[in-house]
Length: 304
Image: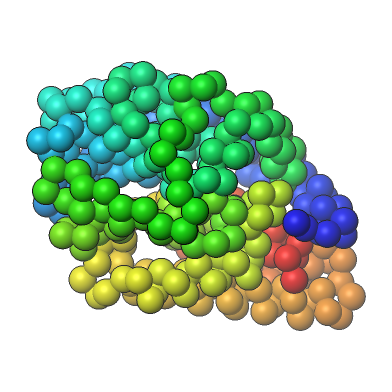
């Protein structure tokens, strides 16, 4: 669990003070999903990605029905349904959650009602059945409806067969949260790594439920060990990419952590550290999304 000092630091990361949107992260994400077009990206074999409803949704279509990795926001249900109908007429059969956050699980209830069994790490279930506070978002999530709660859970690893594809799921340990897993589509050499990788944008790190900057760096290292040059990697947010993209992400995390740690070691306050712009070399590429340079600096500051 995080310390009292870290809690105070996280509480100082007011979304209204540091975010690009003054209303806060959760309403901003839901509003964006309510308006966004759902884009379908073909990946490899019978795997696609749906973009536009919170986190990226992987789709595996086959004779056993449709398997989804993550469910996005409920406000996107109609457009997700339309997108899926353009991929396959098969029914929804399985859903895997990469972690517990609302932009990856809010659609669980309707996907389950449509016939899908929900699989996730045990800690995802634990967060969904309880009221869960994310301090940096200044938001407390109520318990999810019963239909949204995973019914198949695991601790370290799990696997399943779906149509012609064998899937491997493995727990990272603490990373972005304490519930993150990857989903490997073995025959296709495709992996969904959830929010352990944000492609081209600064990531959110949820200290309230076990994440940290150091754990994110460790997860990036694990991802580099997991994938090959040929592997197609699906991030939690951003475009699909490859091993070189993950390496660039890892290097960015390491460099900014070092910059922020040096400033904090010199006694700089959070405001002084933000003013020093320790992310400046990376802002043009990575700082153009919901997590602003100032907010990301605060997340790193809380963990060093």
